[in-house]
Length: 50
Image (tube, rainbow, N blue to C red):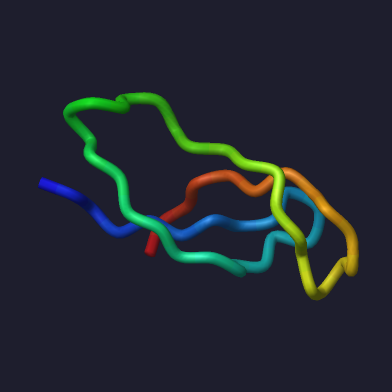
């Protein structure tokens, strides 16, 4: 049921984090504010393709 997703930085577009989510429960795309080591700041990370 749970699918693997990748969280990518919105500014530099690098894939920094991996996570999993249940597609039946949460249907919208995941976005979280996380630390980007490339930008060296906290930025929004959106769900992308694995």
